[in-house]
Image 1: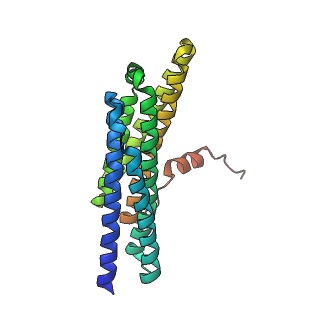
Image 2: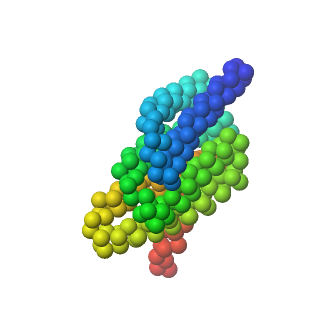
Image 3: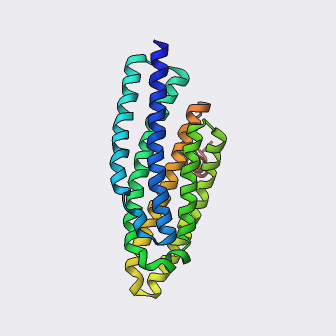
Length: 231
C-alpha cells in the first residue's frame, strides 16, 4: 500500500512539474514578445493553454483519488492540498499568458511607449518571480519561496508607476488613449501574474513548514489599522 501511495505521489508531482514547464514556456514567450516587439513569439501560446487545461483536470482528479484511496495525513496531506492550490495557480498563469499575448499584438506599434512606461522591466520581474516560485516547488525550497514573496512589492511599484505614467499620457495626448488603455490592461495582467507566483510560493511554504501565510500582509495591515476597543 505504501509503495502504491509513493508512486501516486511521484506521478502527481511529475505532472505538476510538466504543467509548470508549459506555463513557464508560455510566459517566457509572451514576455520576450513584449520586450522585443516580436509578435510572432506569441504564436502557439493559446494552443498550449489547452495542454495546461488538460493537466489541470488530470491533477485535480489525481488529488481527489489519492485523498479517497489513501486518506493521507500530516505532511502527505499538506502536499496534496498544496498540489491542488498550485495546480489552480498555474492554470491561471496560463490564462494570463494568453491575455498578455493579446495585448502585445494590439500594442506592438507602440514599443517606445512600452519602454518609457517600464512595462518591460515589470514583465521581466514577474516572469522571474514565476520561475523562482516553480523552482521553489520543485526543490522544496522555502527560502526561495520567501524571496518570491518579497519581490512582489517590486512588481506592485512598477504597476503604480506605469499606471500614473499612462494616465498622464492619455491626458496630454488623446491620440494615445487606445494604446495606453491596452497597456494599462496589460500591466494589470502582469501584476496578477506576480500575485499568482506569490501564491505558489505561499503554498510551498505551507507544505514544507506547515505555516499558513496567505494574505499575511493584508491581515497585518488590517490589524494595525484596527481601532482600539474602549476599555
